[in-house]
Image 1 (tube, rainbow, N blue to C red):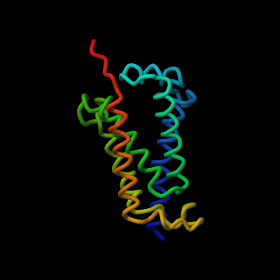
Image 2: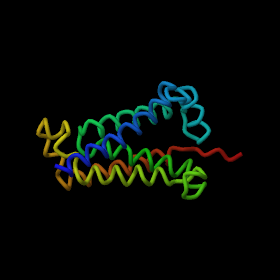
Image 3: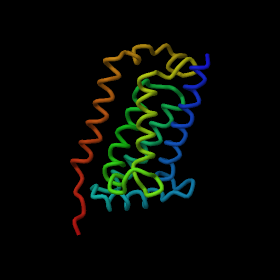
Length: 166
């Protein structure tokens, strides 16, 4: 029982935080830049067309957060978070070192580790997956394939980037 409560709390913390971060970009909520600002930021990172990448980042964060919070879709939500963090850490945070106070990768590492743990541990008793008896989403081979696919998607997005050189 405590394990299931712990997973519920972890899902809520990770999922709601990720969804709120996406809502900042998608809707300008919580002091965020909104879609225009998100597109401009993605363009400054070399992603074209920036509107598409801004929307993709925004809605990936919202959807992955909702999936984790609800405990729905097994490793899909956590995998999307990991994919997002690969891109964010590589483009924005890595040049700034490790610690968040300097804009480094620290928060991305924590999100990625939490997402990996949720994908591997499952969502627990208090999840929609359990309520809908979606146990095939707990197969180790499927989880591994989905996580590797998400990492590949993050790397593919990075390969599409045309960094500004001047």
